[in-house]
Every structure is written in structure tokens, then in C-alpha cells.
Image 1 (cartoon, rainbow, N blue to C red):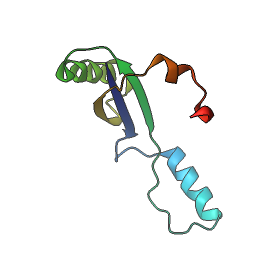
Image 2: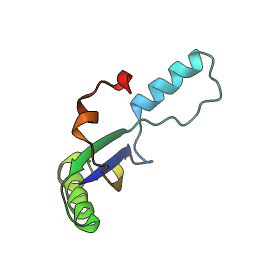
Image 3: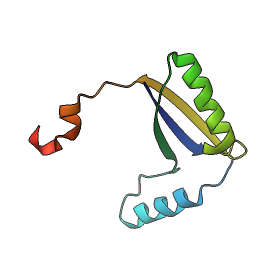
Image 4: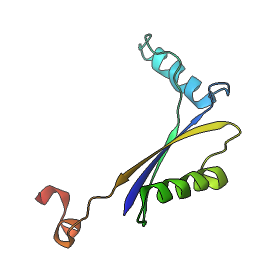
Length: 97
């Protein structure tokens, strides 16, 4: 089992209206040091697979076909091995540690 983390950002040449709005709001709140704020998104997905190379290829395919718009967005893919979860820890509330 693998975990893919996909970070998607607008290309540097594409105006980030949401980022510009948040940057202006932060400056209005007194954070004058903020500049060039850009907002993106992250997608995290677990995938079954035996080889990282094949999982990466499949995730890249998903990004090209659906998850990102390659015309206006860049993306980065990070693949890690998922840590196995034991049934007892998965059902226990976090505050019971």
C-alpha cells in the first residue's frame, strides 16, 4: 500500500485571483511583509500496488486525465509507503492515546 500526495499549483504565468485576494486581506490585517501569495491544493490518496514506479506512473496518469489541468497548473507527486494500521488503533479515539 502506498500513499500519494499530489500538490497542485497554478503555473507562475497564470494569475492567482484567490491568492491575490488573500494577500490583500493579510496586508489589511497588518501583515505588510506578505508578497506573492499563491494558493494551491493537495490531494492525498492511498493506492494498492507492488512497485513504487508503477504506482507513480498511475498517479501521473490520474493527474494528466483528471486531477490537474496541465494547461494552467503544475503538480508534484510524492509517493510513500503506507504504514500498516492495527485494527485496535484504527478504532480507538485519538484522545485515548
